[in-house]
Amino acid sequence: MADAPETSMSVFRLLPSLSEYRHLQLNSFDSRQLMRWQDGGSEADRLAQLRAGWTGEKRWAMSDFPSGYPGAPVLSRRLTEDFGEDLSTAGSLVPVEIDGARGDEYFLYIVDAVVDCLDLRRSSKPKRLDGEVKKPVYRPEALPMHLPAFRLPQFPTAVQWNSWAAARLVELTGDQIEARLTWSQDPAAKPHPDPWGF
Image (cartoon, rainbow, N blue to C red; front, side):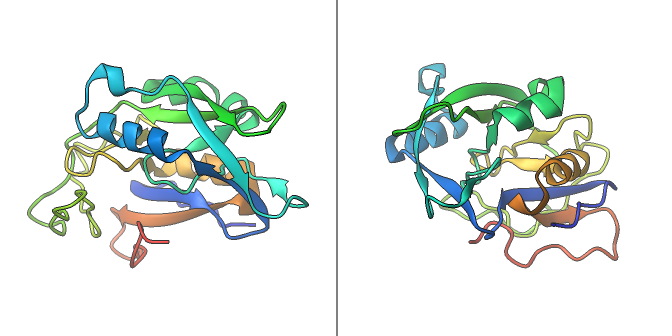
């Protein structure tokens, strides 16, 4: 079972663990459209549904958190119901259409909340190609701790999870989620050396 993230003021990247669970491979056209919308596209680019297909051994259980794409967290119906209405404070859920699947109810969590809370002077410089911030430092007074997740204007194609939401999802899924610390207000905490890598 994965260790639950600390619930202090900290931020995480969530991705499926490498345990024996089936994961989703997202439709490349839909993924590009989502990135276009996140990167300042029009409302017409916003996805109404996401297409995907299962990967992994058929004998493995299907993950409740099956997408490793940084900007496209996918949650099972169980997670969305157990998490409650908190998800709607930062975004909305759209259905995932899974190739050849029947009764597998999953939802893409589209995070609308874009919050300018990065300390640009102390953070690593955003990468030119995609805006990735490898070593972020946040301004605590600007961090939207009331939201489960948010995106940064500098790195809009990645979802950042606040500590309380990350802890709750890890608690609900056990060994299915890897929570990588990207920043903490606790100076003793050690952020992951490559939080956005695979």
